[in-house]
Amino acid sequence: MCNTKIHETQPLLNLKLDRVMQDIVYKLVPGLQESEEKRIREFYQSRGLDRVTQPSNEGQPARGGMGSDTFDHSRAHYFRYDEHVSLCLEKQSSSKDKSKAVLQQKYVRCSVRAQIRHLRSVLCHRLGLPPQHVQILFNNEALPDHMTMKQLWLSRWFGKPAPLLLHYSIKDKRR
Image (tube, rainbow, N blue to C red; front, side):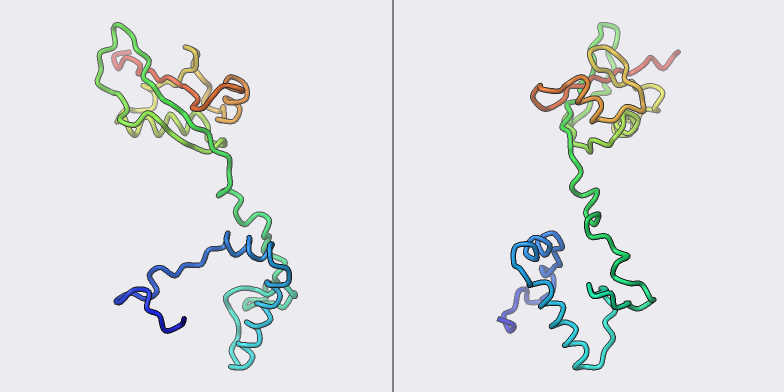
């Protein structure tokens, strides 16, 4: 198996460490993590090398004197597995507004921690407008900048199907 070429010119191109898969396998196969760490230690000891990549689980300090108890595995993927909310951003139609500022892609998926100010900032960037000219609305009511998507979803859209429908309006530039 070791002599099989994956790619002719770049053999290591598709070989990547997958921490999530590794964590799943370690949880499913009892004793695998300990035996693997033991084999790694034996490998380095047999060659007289210092292991500098990851601290072991037995409290042996790694290079720099840091113990393994300083890394909290429970928070390793804290933001990766954040909840997401799907949004549909539509321009609020008005009879006097004939501007061409309409989004090309009106569907957005973002973290539930995102605030209205973040959404407005992205919207302004996409439309090429300054932030003071764009307002985000829900049922013709302006939303406060500090409100998170989770607060919005739970207070105004709970029990309804995704995506959460929001409107945006562009204030007149003359005011």
